[in-house]
Amino acid sequence: MILTHNMMSRRSQTRFLTLQRLAAIAVQGGLSETTRTCGNPSCACHKDAERRHGPHLYLTFRSRDGRSSSLYVPREQEPRVRKAVQAWAKLWETIVEISHRNREQMGGAMRRRKTRKGVPRGGRKA
Ligand SMILES: [Zn+2]
Image 1 (cartoon, rainbow, N blue to C red):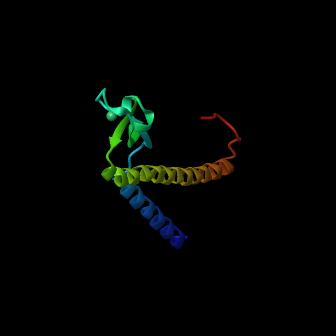
Image 2: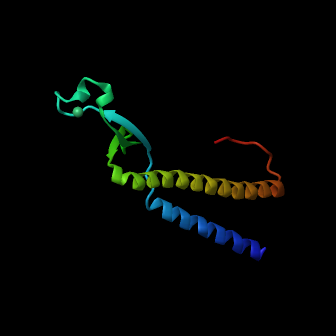
Image 3: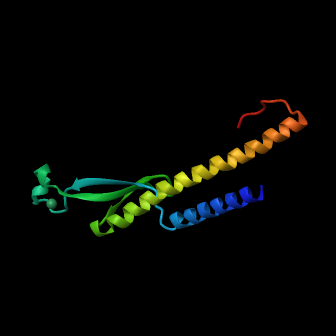
């Protein structure tokens, strides 16, 4: 019992360290590459789609007010931004796993209580 408890807390300690490490760099969004025309109307990119500039990398995301936005990502920043987006995915995965474990513990406690007190099954759904 004590051994199990220690193992669990060590495991959850590791999870929280992972969360902290990921949260420090995570960015929610997607990466997409597009070609563009430039500001010079006499440039070939305006007449020939093959000669459009790029492909350029953009980070697309929803801003605080819920609007979809994008941010140009210079090539030298690409590894950093990719790492940030991957960190978000991993962060989300980790949080979902924490939620499963928390709910399972919660569910166990409620089942035990129900059995002991003889509370009928069912009830209001969330
Ligand atoms: Zn151009």
